[in-house]
Image (cartoon, rainbow over all chains, first blue to last red; front, side, top):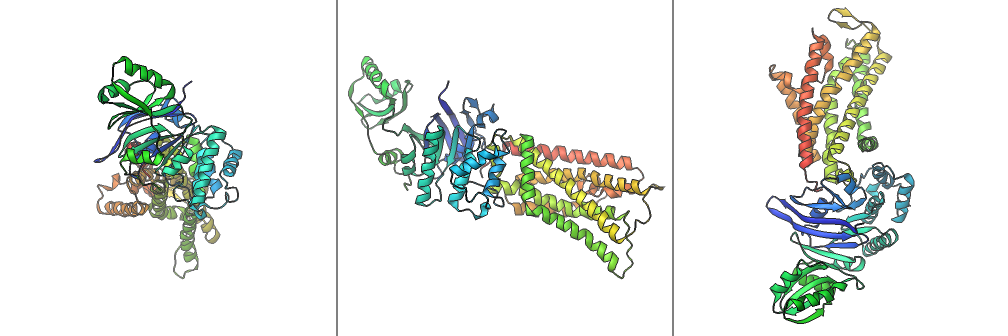
Length: 305
Length: 256
């Protein structure tokens, strides 16, 4: 049984002269709350749209739950809920009626499920009011309710707290955490907000100018560590470890090589480096705040809010 | 999935005020000449037998095409702009299914509007006028019931060229980003087609709006031939513009 719910291989998209997404590779495991972080215009929304089949990639594959989006479009999206950018609704209809439209598209989703998701997102009192009278926060909640309707295993949210006041942001974050824990839903959250990722995500990838520049776990009790290998033989170490199983990320820094590695592989890597006669000065675990990490990764090109 | 999408399109359409406004316009535009004829001092003779076909000429040639344009702008361009077009797509509906469902609902709308026009025409005329002289086709006088059947037939036949026009409007709607442009350009197109028909007798047979008013077919010496031409031209329009719409939608990046 595969644990990967979403796999993106070499995804590329160009709009005219602008290369919006450049060979993006990602793997998301079941149960992850994945933060897809990047400044405005980095290509996050384009990537999301390619995952959902709304934008045709120039190259690459999207595999959801084992189904390739190109070949098994329906099966791939069957257990996916999504809210893309500002959630859009038929404003002349009520919140309930808008959800009913989504319910109609699925065989196994019933009236009672609509009531259930309305309750989950706390819109019970407003469900029968027209959406045109909803605040931004209520629309975001309704968008999340819609994404929940088909009992999804993966929910993709694009800037879920955009336009919300601090209290609204807190409530949405709490809602995502609750859903992740209680229903084991995998979340793919696209945002430009550092603190949002830090508070709710267990894994994060940074996208800058269409490229993934980093992909790492955030939780303290994770099985992956960032370690720094201090060596003068940076190229040799890089060559040796870049395709090594269990090494997720590798980058050459000033006085060595930094790798993101599964904890139980550290010893093996140590042995490997030794057997290849590479001169290693130290191997040191790397600990830094998320904010510092991002600034280092992006070269300070981030809007931290 | 197709059935579910059609159900949703209907649900949306019936929730729109526009549909009821269209019906009100048809009602008013039908009733005004009836009342004017009844109460004016001028000698205008209206008969129940002929009034529905007279009414079809202006409704099918002018009013219904404008409704089609407004509805297509709502169903395609406005939905795309508002971001609601993608909702079915991210819930596993195929683009082809979305396009077909919208087209089928448009055809149903045309059918409903035509039936409504027919009913309002018969009811309003029968309240104020008598049935008058029966239908005459190629020298043959028809019974009242056959006259009604021919009238219904012509109403139903006009669905076909109007559907072909809808496919053309769908194609234009898919290519424009603003509902205002869709309405403006398509209404301009309706008038342009009408002008071309009047200016050039040789081109008019390939102009789709030439076939909207099916009532005039009954004046032809060879009704069968006229119907075949109507079906042929409509089919050509449908094939060309449906194919173009499908290619456009298939390759379109949904960025809103």
